[in-house]
Amino acid sequence: MTTLLWLRQDLRLHDQPALIAAAAAGAVVPVYILDDDAPGAWAIGGAQRWWLHHTLDALSKALEAKHSKLILRRGDAVEILTKLMEETGADRIHAIRHYEPWWRKAEAALGERLCLHDGNHLARPEHVRTGAGTPFKVYSGFWRALSQMMPPAKPEPAPRKIEAPDRWPHSYTLSSWDLLPSKPDWSTGFGEDWTPGEAAALKRIDDFADKVDEYEATRNLPGEEGTSRLSPHLHFGEVSPRAVWHGVDGHHDAEKFRKELAWRDFTDGVVMAMPDYADANGRPKFDTLPWRTGKAADADLAAWQQGKTGYPIVDAGMRQLWTTGWMHNRVRMITASFLIKHLLIDWRRGERWFWDCLLCADYGNNSVNWQWTAGTGIDSNMFSRIMAPLTQSEKFDAGDYIRRWVPELKGVSDAAIHDPDEAGCRPKAYPAKIIGHREARERALAAGRQI
Image 1 (tube, rainbow, N blue to C red):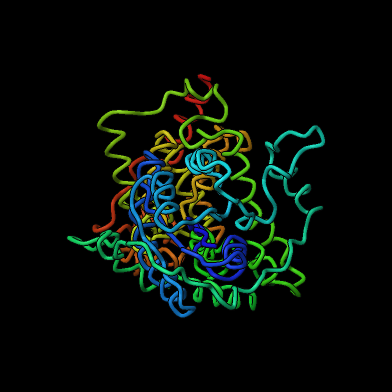
Image 2 (image 1 turned 30 degrees about the horizontal axis):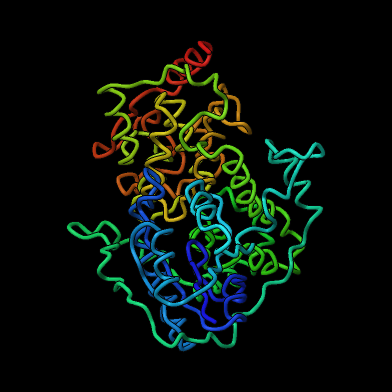
């Protein structure tokens, strides 16, 4: 018997329930389909394509080491899987369950041919419910309910053997997909910070476990390596959440980190209940908020994207994002709040930029995080809560972080680095603030009062 293994954001061999089931049934044809049509406007962004190339290459080599092969196809996933079943004589497709609306639609279209497995969450989001049986709209309640279901099962090892079919179907070559940027190659900084693939992901868990006890104290400090930096590996499914959960066993201060890990489950539950959450305000009353548009707003958006706002902590974050495909979590909140509140630009424009630039831009996580910051979501800050970037920068000791990513400010003292404009020592090469904090705050509050 031959079965297909449909791979998406679950690119690993260990703790891969779909692979384990397929391998137990007989010959396996692992297939990855680059489907840019089903997601529509949410096809994977440029930064994610860089990672995808390298992780598919790593997975292909791992499969070859087990005398198997990764089949690459491009186009409509449902049509291609249907054709592959005919080509190979497969009677079943094994896959891990996904929650993006386009994948849920594809899974429904495949019907009984598809055998779905749970492997990308600590628990199935639809199984974590309120006492009334409804989805949670507030994370704190979700976490309490999920905690009662923990710990998750221990991760399972990769199959010792993956049986090959009698004949392999045709496959594209990875290089023919042109996933890597060129002319220009804006990804040169990615390789300095990241090594995609399952082996690197497992090593990162081990490295982080040694310092997870310091996580609560250091995770908000941009200048320190206090976060796990596992988000791209989790996004592409190079490790399972339960492998990460158990990877920090034995550390008494791991709960804060595990609470952050569970946020991914919560966000998938949100987009399962509200599939258009990436495009529509979670609170409809915000549909009338008077966002700025036009040439002046476009110019401000470009300054934000390029890290030229005159706010050092904001500019450092945006430049880190462009260079490495990642941004420190505390700085993500600061930069997002700045775009929404200081510049009064629609959160969806920032969400789109992050989608294209972040290596770890989950559909659920990205949209829920932006709406949380904007105050437009079902679980979010109040719109009137406006983060003060200059105060945040000083509070979280971002001086060295700023000097690394904004070299124009390398020579500025610790006392002035957070606001060189105010200190009167701004270098000519660094731009002045595009708007004052007080002016921006008053404008945002006035807009909020209109709704």
